[in-house]
Image (cartoon, rainbow, N blue to C red):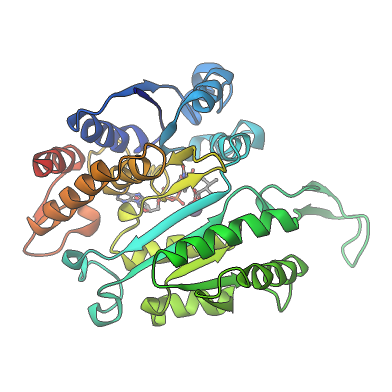
Length: 358
Ligand code: NAD
Ligand code: IPM
Ligand code: MN
């Protein structure tokens, strides 16, 4: 059966890195129907909207979406609804992609590329599970207005609303416990329950759900402490489950433990198993067009796509082994380069992964 993949490469380094991942998928000779569509700033330039109707329709009818990145400084002055980032938020919301898996794995070959000492990070293998369709990202009301009250009444104020409904917390908690069950059976729920009501409810519900998973040990941690523990003793974690905003921040932090944000893939899944797969990093406008971006996070995202949405773990394993092999051959893009290794560009890294598939 042919499976349909929507390829949305987006802005900045998006097209460069997605090209490598698509090359790898094609080299595997699977029966995939790959269709591309514009998204982000590129789509705004072409069609006046970052998420054109046709792009959204293609995403909805596909088994999976391979996504590059969106955003560029030149769009930062547009009204919010026209900014590239809205395409990604719109896709997540429209497809109900509430569960965002961001695995931070340190390949042994990159022990020195991590900003932490090898004795602290070697062997690191943690999973950050980020709730992706709720929280302050999507809560209303929000806006910029004249403050109606308080010490600054009459002056301009910006406001957003952090909110989580019980079923939203419950479903991500279940995913967290199930992920932990398949791993080292440790789940750490990260919140700010000492200050926020949203977090208090989060903590209560996660605790309630834990009764259904007696073999998983649950701990709770405040987000500020979690940020600290991630750089103090990251291997203490197995699965971290947290809300949208805390997960955004902690996953970038965890990325650095793996050597570079260019190494961190992600899967965003809905209840039907449909998924959007993208590197955890952005469009990196500072290096776009130079041919030096690390494509491995995107290639590893394609592997996650095969595993989680296309039911092809064998092909996923193959890609992951190939990535490991090119690293052990000493090939490095600039972001993970160290003396004694061979620096290669984006294309050459993609080619090397294909070579290593054999
Ligand atoms: P960024 O992740 O794009 O870049 C941060 C730093 O990491 C930069 O120095 C960049 O060069 C480097 N980097 C990122 N990916 C890399 C790769 N594959 N190889 C080598 N180096 C890499 O974050 P930013 O600079 O805060 O944001 C830039 C733009 O991207 C903004 O418009 C932002 O909104 C957008 N953004 C998009 C996504 C997404 O599409 N999922 C995610 C984050 C940021
Ligand atoms: C990410 C990004 C996005 C987010 C932005 C671009 C909307 O930072 O995927 O981590 O904040 O979720
Ligand atoms: Mn982010």
